[in-house]
Length: 211
Image (tube, rainbow, N blue to C red):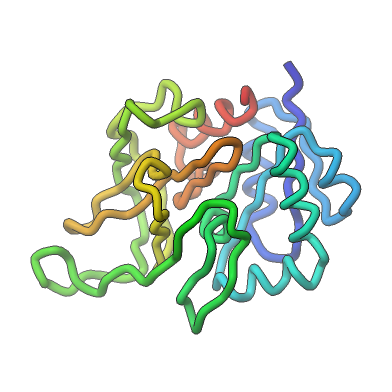
């Protein structure tokens, strides 16, 4: 089975660390902003860090949105990471409303400033947290991942897919449910950074390379 993966470089994202993790997992990877490379890819990775609007803006300025949408229509797998995952949804309220890729219906909203008990907590949600995996809908990306695996998050906004079945795994942040992994068909995403999440993150990357 081929382990070729194409990482989209649009000037925003942890390109080096993502590429390093895929290298470690034995992938033959290409990092590119070339439209033809994206359209002929076997599988795509969409990284992202920073503000949603900036990331989407850079994608649009580079002319990458339509090639990504055409790629998804072929049924080949796409993985979004951190803000790259958030961009899979319809829109985000971060610093105003910004339109996403619309591949998974839903919105990105601010993490509440308090826990479920009403007590203030730190935002961004940053550091290690446990996954809450629902085995009934976890899918191939989470195959073999422990239901309470530790992974590394850094984010102030959280995804809310319209269809709860698109939430493949969550995390609990002081009683607030955080969408940790989402998926719909061949489109999937991790809010946390698998490239910084130790063996659990590397296992998720290996799973993506098998899809």
